[in-house]
Length: 461
Image (cartoon, rainbow, N blue to C red; front, side):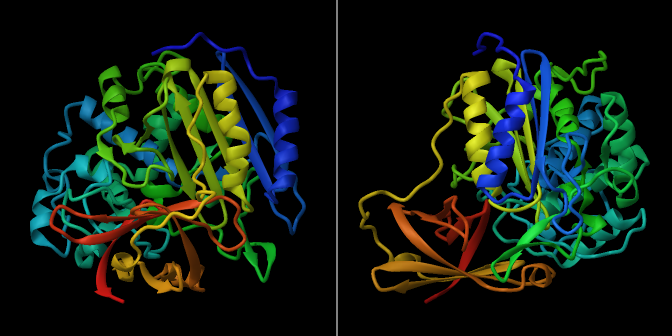
């Protein structure tokens, strides 16, 4: 379905809206780019760093976090176009060095599993392996002790490690580091000038620092970003306009505005096809394709991805049926509320898309079974302790591993029943509600889906 080509967005009006919403939702700084009617409008508001007072501008770089996964998936699909990768071949076909804790998974996990978050591999593996060009190779070596959160193909569970493994495949087949492959195979053909992976490049320009709440006050973070080894999963820094330039190729059958065929139309269609269903349809779509998340149930269909690093959050939405793309980059505060207040209305105005409303608890209490959900759920990087308290449930989130140093304090969440298996909750101080979904896998294993991750139950309460 294709809608009539929309009018362009007024940049001055966009700036006014962004400025008002940044102030309303306590976001230090933000940048937005909107492609509509064949033209790109940009705006920025707020500050890049509350300590330095440097203003955010449209040409400022933000960390786009996991939107990076779309770039890594594109690199893989270029190699598919070249006949060098079969998505349904085991990853070890191209990456003989791959060894996981489960030898059967090592032998069977495919490239498609990696790109669709269905590998079941423990996904939040963030070792700091230094800054050498061999960090992605060393990351893959460190996966030898990385176990399964869930059986291969059992359900979707967000997997950063799968994309780093995919990035290593890109390295071996191109003979370049992932950073260099990104620069030569994507950034250069796109003709963009402010998309980087290394801090020494980013810091030549205005760049955002993340902010997190500490002792009730929003403050700049002390850790700029995640370790370089995690690059293929989430370390690109870019302007909002550069992100939209990348996304635009998916509106134009893989072709850049300069006429370069970055990706075949067949690969574009394959990446956007909704395949792996998400039990939590509120956080980032209803399905994963290959890299891209699809927001089914609306027409024309919306695709996108979110990103989060240390104190920064990013959002990308594209509507191929309307030739629309919107990128919003932020550096702290109530970013999800800013997204709801800015991007959702813009999608309706320029693409004719009425997106489903954000999750909220019912106005009248819903009575559902609670006791079956109580217990301890654990995966690599996090433990979730769900317990019955009075007439409700609470969930205590405890980070483990390297993330415990970045987010050290356990978080306690109240769960509000929406319907059987679905609960609404929100982080302390946040306004936006998040979904927590309880599910039993086909083999009977109970698990909880939160923040796109599936975590199996290891003990009853």
